[in-house]
Image (tube, rainbow, N blue to C red; front, side, top):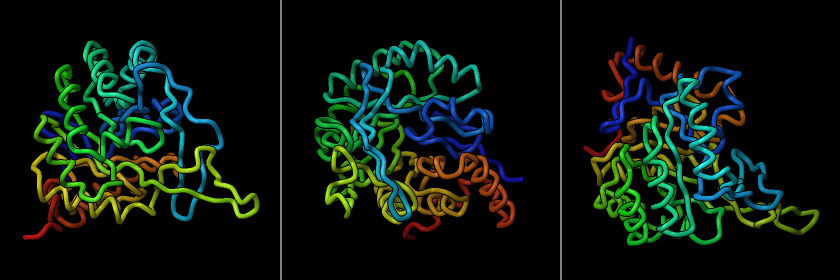
Length: 304
């Protein structure tokens, strides 16, 4: 039987299939389906320094082969997460990765400082790539110097591996990846959502209250796969592939493109059993193809 143990630098997980930040919340809605110890890790819902009500509604729209969201980082804030959500997640066996966003570098730094005082976190994921907030978010992820500044400040405080989530809404994603690597990022995750919109032909108005949102789901998989493949060629940092993964075959394609692990987002909304099915399917495929582990197939689609 294939060994699914996954090593992302110093971060060791039992399998390479995670719950991506956002659609999984803090796991409270999914624990009725399977234990939180089953995913390799749970990337908690994105956090800001203070509680945030998010954007006005409507803020979700279904699209062909995907969905648009403009949630706007609705969350209870870092302190409430540390007090209420983190202990509950840990008590239910989750390997917890905290995801942080912000409107300024100092917000990121303070969130990292407070989280570093909490016990039990497996890693921190820095979201410099959210298209659904005004100021910050995607602005940091599209400017190499700003991205580097945020990573540098967060790294000062983090006592756990630092994951940085990259935006696809750039001309050259490898430029951002290299700038972040130079500041000490331990792991990269990509991609976040693509900027998009939907218009209602009846009302002649945009469907989302904020007009634009982030596109996710199977529609973005070819873009995500290409970007993982590109970044894997310029950095030795471990990569978590994200974008349109709904099956074991999808996950395997990301491994072949150079990803060490994958995270499932929108797929959880369509099929709450998506994560366990992908884990089982990856293991079955490795056995059938005669591979001992995911590392044996990682990067086989890269040039040379």
